[in-house]
Length: 317
Picture 1 (cartoon, one colour):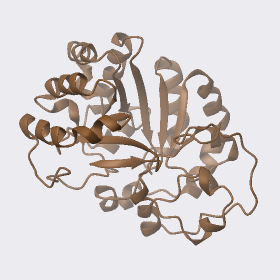
Picture 2 (cartoon, rainbow, N blue to C red):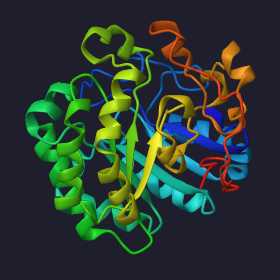
Picture 3 (cartoon, helix red, strand yellow):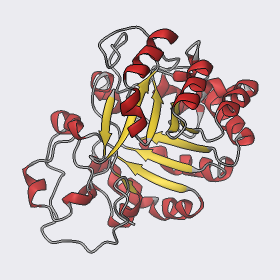
Picture 4 (tube, one colour):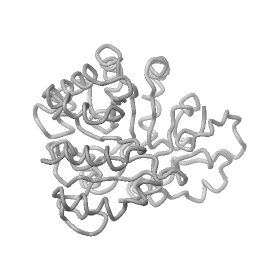
């Protein structure tokens, strides 16, 4: 899928296939099988390369390639695809989104890291312990594998490689954010970035709304309770907040807020048109408006003075 992130900078999404070894309740993918951007269902190596060749010009105009799935690392030709991307698109940053379980095998982690010395990997943990994480992924043993995978990546990465950790807030996990932050500080302080994500309500996530749904108003006081821990941690590790409109989060967090949704997934409601901070805001997600409502989004009727970063992804510094 070719998309525009933050309405200005282009990134290219390369979905390797529709298979995964987790069954995350908040997954935003549709039930498998789903088609690639050209409408075909072929995820073998030759089909993927053929699609990349068709989009070669657009990819070379983009700043990065997001390698997604399903779970990319369990594709049987993952190594070959990564080598192809490295050789044919050397100027684009390759960013792998993974659950990290495959990297629990240290030799595999070493082999993948050796392919691209500039590779960026964002992997996921959904709780501070096995009970919470595995309840979210519905895959027994996934927490231990992901945790070991992260350790192996940090131990073997080169100086230019970036390793990030993602934590998606769900009803099953959000109240454990304090313990999760302690886990990061105590065990994984070597990561390059920490990303805290509010869930998107679409595809399979909508089917599991009773289990996962939280509202911004529920999250805000809890996040504020651990505000100093997050801000302190952000001085050690680059910390990002994804999917948070400005009006639903404390202003002290604004420098951590990133604009992350493509334009077609955002719907600025009538109240947003009055907001003096609209240009800095990611906006409400359509899935949230459809499944939760609009009441939480309140406009700033006068401008709040902020220092602009010049970065369209993270507009406030």
